[in-house]
Amino acid sequence: MIRGAPVIATLAVALTGCATSPPLADGLPASAPRTIELDSTPYFPQDDYQCGPAALATLLVASGVDVAPASLAPEVYLPERRGSLSLELVGAARRHSRLPYVLANTADEMVEELEAGRPVLVLQNLAASRMPRWHYAVLVGYDADRNVAVLRSGGERRLEMKWQRFAGTWHRGGRFAMTVLRPREVPEHAEPARFIAAAAGLEAAGQRRAAAEAYDAAIARWPDEADAWLGRGNVAYADGDRAAAAGAWSRAIMLNPTSAAARNNLAELLLEAGCLEESRRQVERAAALAQGTALEPAVSEGRSRIAATARAAARCELEDRAWPD
Amino acid sequence: MSMNGFRRACVAVLSASLISLGMQAPAAAGVVGTAEAIASQDRNARAVVDATLARADVRAELERMGVDAAAIEGRLDALSEAEVATLAGQIGEAPAGGDALAVIGIVFVVLVILELVGVIDIFKKT
Image (cartoon, each protein chain N blue to C red):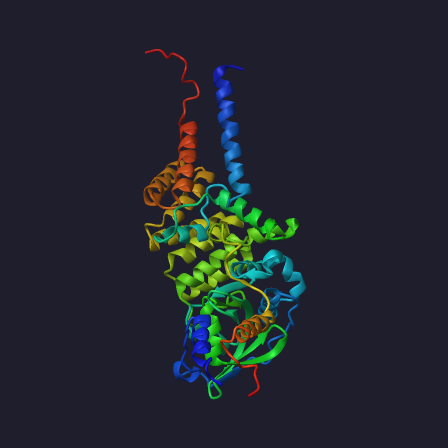
């Protein structure tokens, strides 16, 4: 009757990529509660293949954004793939003025985010590594005593999944997990580089107000992070506040004298202000620093532009005439 | 107009246009975005990809994937240059979270096949 058992076992290992996770209680930090459940997290039953919009809407509504999955679908859904890419969920969160924060690839940060009251969007691979079945769900809690994860998932408002099974699907899904932060929210466990990069994403998406608030929060928490000042200056400059931009970029350069970006940007501002000599000095240093990096083309373009303007300004307007000895 | 006067006018117009360009579109003209600055610090980053090229590539891929043309620019605008470069060439393969329900079907089919070829006998009543 069980002659097929070894085959099934082999098959199971092959299918799951033999991911074995410990029970939740083994990995749970001593300080973490035994049980958390964010009951008030909204639930949106997914339409066909639309777990991306549904899961993202769950996070956004939980963070105070008024949005429905149907209006998120055009922002994230890929009809031919019958699914959504995680990077596009990140982009869509920005479009709603929230800071998408991608978590580290350990479960610890998930627990900490739940403790902070934020549900966690996770990418699961429900099938095999080689035959994937990708799915987004929202982790809203866990129970260490009963060893379960609690999810909003697909057609189920409250899905309990054995922790090892949940951790396995998440592991096979590439360990992608994210939360969305309100303006000025900085997670307790946040690393400066990762948080500032997330704020830079808001800036890149043109969400200036949200980006400014995120940079302000980053500066309040880590006043010596040069990139936070660089970003604050960029947003101030885009808002037309040159004095604030000059101050922030100068601070960024003081904290990190090798910041080619901050020197380049300050040089642009100085050029506009007519301070050509100082503009040239900064852009020359920026060009030297940017050599061999991805910034080289942008900085050398600015450098030649600034040099041309300086030449034009310094040019003698009557240079072709002959003058008496 | 003398030659000098013409040259002076040209320089003035050019300088004015460059400066006003800088004020109208600060992010585009000269100023380096924070995301690009951070990406450039990553020594492991892939060789510099032309941002315009990557964007065109992703735009075409999104269209091929059935995304409404009117929505494409907005989706691209929500991403940094580095993120767009990451997506380029990946849209067909990167994990796309979709449906949970079809899984049961696949497992069932695998089990039925194994049953039919006689490897397992979980459906037999002994």
